[in-house]
Image (cartoon, rainbow, N blue to C red):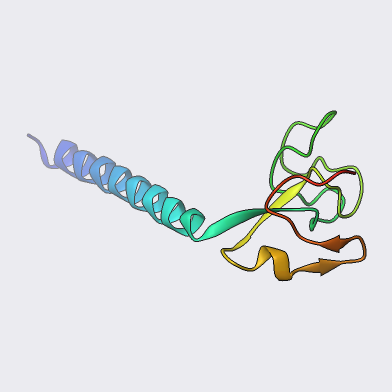
Length: 93
């Protein structure tokens, strides 16, 4: 194997290892989070916010009941908004 091919192979292997490590780190961080409904601001939700929305950033109003954000585990119900507390289940809009 030529020096050039060896360097390319090492670079590709390093990039792959980095990608796998980052994916595992993100998965571990997500495991320490929970979905908290009714606490996101308009357009700042983490994913689907109910009918008429698709994913992140699509909530139509502040504290929309079907919209959620990831928060540290165990903190959702302690979050208080002008519409009430955060919930682990979707809230009525």
